[in-house]
Image (cartoon, rainbow, N blue to C red; front, side, top):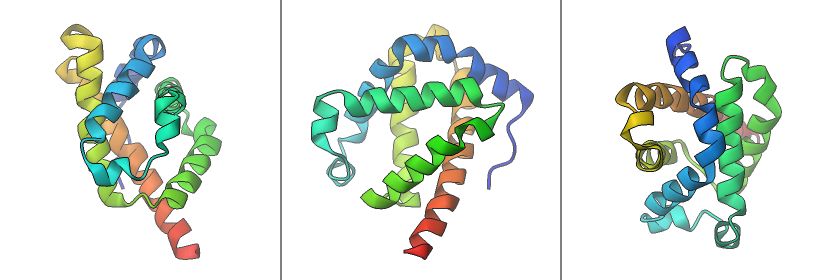
Length: 147
């Protein structure tokens, strides 16, 4: 499990919420473009939801919700449960999480630019991503064990 986030990391992630609100769909669209270079990952996703923009919008909303509530994760318990259910349905494994991180963080820099997506911002988001990923991985492992 990841260590708890520092107050500084939480503050940095929360400070990006307005940029995520404004550019979240562009970020997730760029992320999926990077992620889907791996055909095995692409096959896990409903391509109709990609083409319609539904999936990038859903993920952008989830990222925004995380940024806004990173200091009160209990507010995200319903969203986390839905993600776990969907991930188990589609066969997401712990080994898939690094692929997403390696697509998401560069997409943030690409869309937000170096002035907003500084090294410090990306480092904070990296820590925040892995904290949430660890939560999801643990809950998904429980759900797979219960199948």
